[in-house]
Image (cartoon, rainbow, N blue to C red; front, side):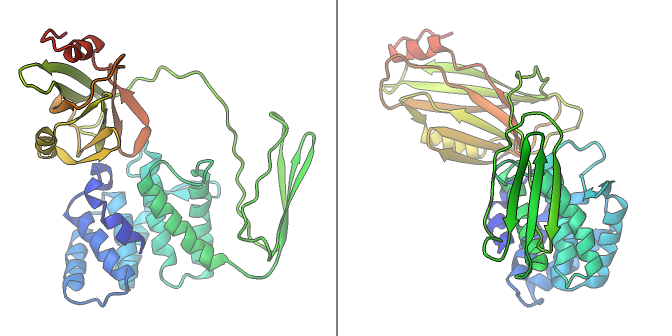
Length: 380
């Protein structure tokens, strides 16, 4: 059922995941196959079309996704061909194994998705002991990418990765056996017991020493996943961003209801020819709401995939931004309630796959906002 949850949001996929006919068809076909639908009619036709696209394996994301689809379809010959190619582009380091879209790909989120699809493909067809050994190396890398709360960079990669990790867990789980995990620190040791009564229980203890050498020792026959998290603060680095958004507010005093037009220009100045999917997060000013007509126009604007409203934010999903070409959008806000001491609001722009690397616009001009509230037509 994992794919059914993802297909509903497939229109949000960006170019990094390749939102073309091949990938969309693969998503939908996998959804039917996960429901154990018979391979006839539309499913059979879709598999036939997908098979024709396999002549080009330059896109690692698509190749990994197709490997999972043909595994579900029981086409072992096509599956073997795709997995063999994936072996040639795998990134290996010690006991870790993963995949990236390109050799210079910096999106950990996309790498998590690709690696998760390979893991699903490996484990969805009666895996052998050798397959489980191969899969364990992918699992080691995936778990190393998890954050403190067990998730990953975005909703998309978290859903796919947890589906793959859950499948692996069901295959290696044993109701018998127990283990003792000992963490040795400079000032002492911490002991975790994993037995039949607490195998599914999350255990956590705080390490007392900030620095020093630590060692782990596991004795027993039960399988356990161990994670050590270090949390610290650092000065905010002066990172050079390749995404920017400029906001120019304009007051409209000709109507009875005060309005504020936000003219937004989004720009990408990186090395690639275009970006992945980009999100504009427009925060509403206190007392203001989006103009319904303007909001509908924005939904059909240039490169806009969809528009969502969440509380006092408007989220604009832009399919991609071409390099060095400013893309203009506009949104009108209507004042529903007068608010004293109105504070500035900001617009954020960020890559769909790397939401942590967001860029803030300059706040909407306070002078423009206050003159609008006073009914003046003078703006800056």
